[in-house]
Image (tube, rainbow, N blue to C red; front, side, top):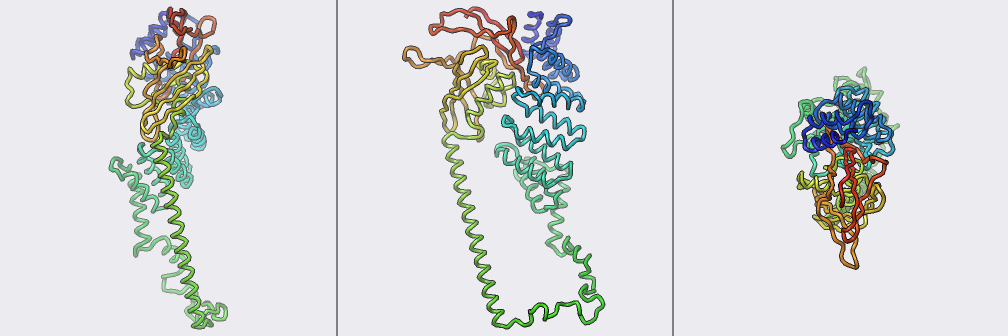
Length: 496
């Protein structure tokens, strides 16, 4: 490897000069050399430049490097590149390969792309299976999106009732702060396809209630059809029931019970029904019994309504209490664990960062997080209504553990990270000191090509081991520090 060319390409990539990065990275490999580290980063550059076919080739070259590993992440990236290059059939094979990698930490990304590939080739059944697998992946931060796509597959297959259930579940997994209008529009279409007109009208009404969403032409036509069906059923015009009766012979001027217009021999006989033998007293008793039954039903309905309202109030109270005490969805510990896991595998961590975190702050957070950590354990959580902090212990790739304190702020009903600091143990009974400075390494998170994370993880250079910087309590120890980048690079800094 031409180390100088590689580092120049990596620096150009970080600075956003993708054309220069491609030029340097192409010079970094010696003739005949196989390097997953170089080709992975080269593939990301080409994806960002929109050169999808060449990006797919770069990812294939990276997969050829057995020592680099991470076949799931590379196969997922290659599948997305092929999909963007309008080669869905080839993309399917690569994405299926990605889902087979048991060490791939975010298989939902491959499943979503696989569903898109199957949809493009018209295999809606397999697309639905892929979207379902994406939705049930516990690491998926947006199961509602996968469920909505699943509902679309059911609609394509003519299974409107199944689509209704998929869309309703998508609404359950979406938050009030997210736009639910598009899901309600899809739900309205599913109800209309199932001839459930009242529900269709209500769903379309939800979709347009806040005035920010406009129905598509197809949905507007479905709404008109639903309104016409409801008006027809409740108005003087013949509805579906009237048409059914007309087909049976009613309303045509001929009594179907006496089609020949004779004595009515087809009419029920008093001897058969006993109706005409009922006395006036018996009729009065029957009326009293009927009134009792109706009152009982009304009381039961009122009791059920009161119980339902009480349960709703209890649920609402519990939700408010949980919100006040710092709980949300996902929980703080879930967000922090996902942050460390994604960073360790070289993924983009932007989804876990607060909206107030700028580019400089994001770079500082990425530089502080440990690259290639093999595990993370939540030690403690300090919760409040709007701000929280989580203390975790990460197992470093080269061995040993390091503690980190992660600060979070509430966004909606969930939590997002707005800062990460290294926390050292207390010395001689003193309070532990927290290092808030940016570590003196060039660790920088790799950008995600076309909405996907790099999914890269550190690989060692030289003798294949990661060098862990040693640090004495008084900061006097000397050593070297090797930092693994999200793009798969490893850099070594000088004396510490």
